[in-house]
Image (cartoon, rainbow, N blue to C red; front, side):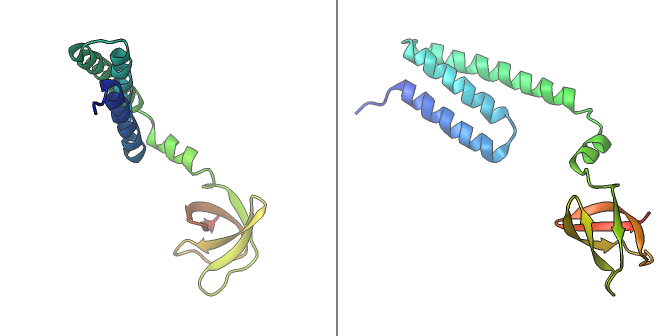
Length: 143
């Protein structure tokens, strides 16, 4: 039984695509695309040398594109990224009372949340600002 090169290229592409989902670098996705291009070349009855050349050209061009894309996005402001990923920070909540461990329940975004006073805070009622979210607990400090 002989396996065609088209099948080998397509299986390679599938394996590389699955591996990309686990790693998330986009380089393996480029290699998977290059393998698909080589499979198309195989379907068009290109010789193995032309299939390898097609794979190499697409892999090289795609890798350079990913590298350039990452370089362009490397200057993204980390503070802005943090703010976009943590939209709750800086929002106000109203606290009625605390327990002896500095915990309370607050209404926030239409639901009841557990909240924990940041260390060193006087446990008084009033408006508090969210400074961090740890799991499903809001860390708050006096506004």
